[in-house]
Image 1 (spheres, one colour):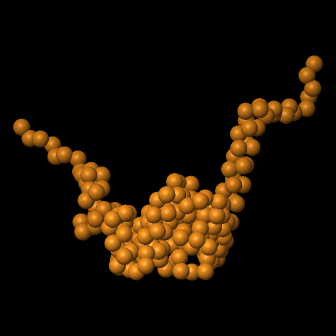
Image 2: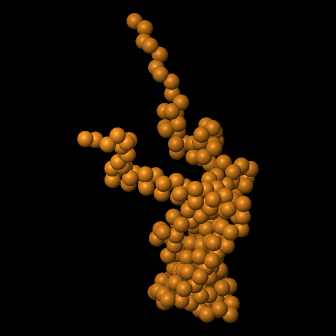
Image 3: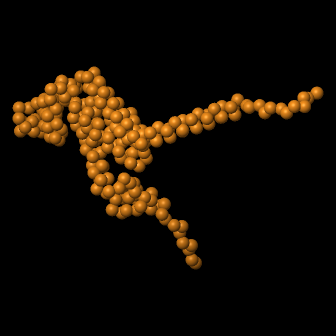
Length: 226
């Protein structure tokens, strides 16, 4: 004989796992929204996070890694007796732009130890590069994703140039500043991608992505007449 009371619906293990997964997603999303709101209201926190993460890491890596043979060449050229001698050595030994050696020459005259002074220009360039990339992304997607873009840069092999006295990080910083200068000249935070979407033919990127957006704007072909 069955009992007259109502039966309780049993929750299968698979359904219970889905409920836990959905609750975890909702909790994570609410946490990310709170963090994004906090960072958007206090952007100086993002700069503080970038500074406290990058600079100590760069100094520690510069201290633990001895100068390579290429870096020793850079120090040797930068410590030439005079500027003409430095430029002559740059043309004979290591063919890099002279501004890099000039920055090395100024840094080596500081009271810092050689392992840090020779790598200080690259470390400063990495800091500038991170700030520009953060500003560029945050202006479009918010401060939280601006920090995410910096994390993507830090997870790439390009971060190794931050504690090397080679000129590669300086080139990256120059390209980032060039991108920021273009954004400032355009007078808009949309800039490059807005030109593509709006169909500005004068944009440098429009010619690159022209087949994609022209295909998107094409209409259906007219019916052929006999």
